[in-house]
Amino acid sequence: MLESRTAPVKAVDERGSGVGRPSEAGTSPAPTWWVWLAAWPVTAVFILSNAATPLYVLWQREIGFSKGTLTVVFAFYIVGLLGSLLISGVVSDRLGRRTVLLPALALALAACLVFATASTVAALIVARLFTGIAVGAVVSAGMAAVTDVAGPHRKRLAALLASCAMVFGAGLGPLLAGILSETLPAPTVTVFIVEMALLATALLAVLRMPVGRPAAPAKGAWIRVPGVPHGNGVQLTLGIAVFAPGITATSFVLSLGPSLLAGLLGTTSRILAGAMAFVMFLAATGVQFAVQKLPRRTILTAGAVSTTLSMVTLVTTVRTSSVPVLIASALLAGAGQGMGQLGGLSLLNSTVPAQRLAEANAALNVGGYVPAGILPVSAGYLSDAVGLTNGATVFATVLMSLAVIGGLVVVASRRRVPEPA
Image 1: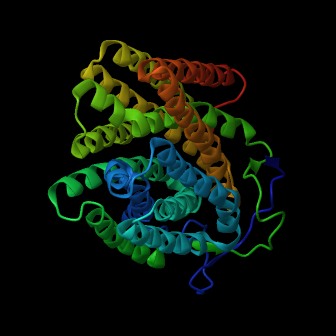
Image 2: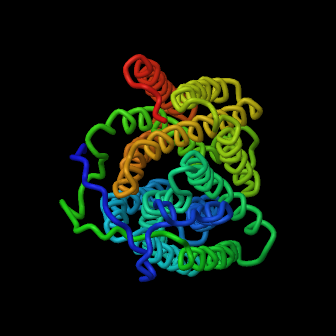
């Protein structure tokens, strides 16, 4: 939803000192190490976001539930995330980043506790719901906090670190869970104890983070579909056009990648499944550092091409049962999400005022996570009906079409919209 631009607001320090944000004129910018540290809460929460993925096979055996029920458990994560995005961005822009991040981290800690003690499907649903809410808060308030700490002269660095923090954490979670569950006792408990320790350090970082709190009165509804100020709709559209197919591709690998590995290799190794996810998101992280200095629309175009190629290789994978091609598909999917995410965040960071930035981040992620939640789940049910090969082929064809359309939208925009400064 597009809305009128709001007036600039004066910021006050959230800890009550009355000073402006570190990024404001007349104040000293935060050291660069603080910009990196400000991204840590995003990483810590995203480690939790996928940490349970390799463990569901254990819970299925211990608790006893079907693949359909497992889909419901996954769906509650998306429900929590999208519900959080409807409010967390607006609240963060009005009351401050810390006001949103502290409850989000507390909820993530609660999710770890529920996961570690889960003995019913209902407990898994509650844990995934809590996780989704926490993730929704950090992709809006957490990423905006990184930009606040960086200040106006380090917006490219802020977008890079915020984006990489998300994808690196998303990849580290399943790898950590796979290794710990295969090598240590209590496989469904240990990883969440480790994650609670990581979240505790993130909590300390947020408490000391040099971010400001807007002093402007609230305007408009507190719960609404997040949007951007008038004039920024093009930037949001370009970001979603590439980011949505990219994150949908990686969501497919996360959800059905273990099934593909089992079919191709005959293995159910949790370490191997976690390693594939980690390598995919490592590619998403590395490619962002590689392309960070390129024009933003060039980054987005490359992201659309990468996602398109990942779907071509996915079709090849299921038709040839080739493990190397499956890995190539995962790497290309990771690169596609990484570049789509970096390009979208960079466009928003460079054009959206600080008092609407968290809401803009939320809008970008709503546009990405809706298809990322719907299409892979649809592909799973379709695969049950017509077989994994045919289901994956249909999914790849649909997503490849969306990626091509997204790339064409970006290319067409070059003639009409100049690259932001």
